[in-house]
Every structure is written in structure tokens, then in C-alpha cells.
Image 1 (cartoon, helix red, strand yellow):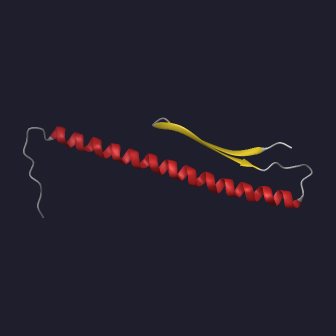
Image 2: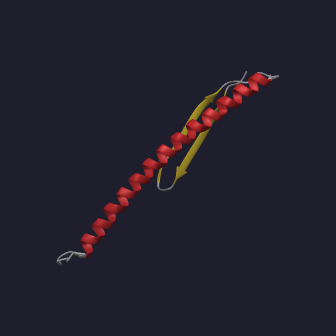
Image 3: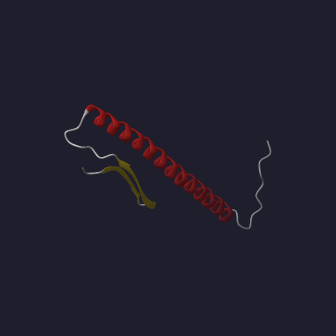
Length: 91
């Protein structure tokens, strides 16, 4: 009776890699319909949990990227306008 798991991995050159792992129930052979049904239900739940974890992690990274990009744009604008008075448009 071997146990199994659902494991996901994410790697990007721009950020740290991460993995998720969810344990699945072991299947005994020969398997009954009830065992297969329970295994598939556990697999479906593990996939849903993995998707939620991945979405949370990627959303967090996306927000960090946006904040970093916004800060870089502000610094570039300040450098571009250094020593000059900048008139803001009034609508």
C-alpha cells in the first residue's frame, strides 16, 4: 500500500521557486469502486487546494512586481525632471 501525493512546482527567472504538496489516500489493489471514488474525491480536493495556493502566491508576487515597477517609474520621472520645475496640468 503506497501513499501518493499531488505536487506542483513553479519556477521563474524573476522570482523564487515554490512548491505545493498534498497527500492523497493510498489505493489498495485490487481497488473497489468505493476506493476509486474516495481517491478521486481526494484528488479533486487536492487540486482545488493547490490552485488556491498557487493563485495566492502568484497574486502576491504580481502585487510586489507592480509596486516595484511603480517605484521605478517614479524614480525615473524624478531623474528626468531633476532641477526643473514641473507644471502639472489642471483640467
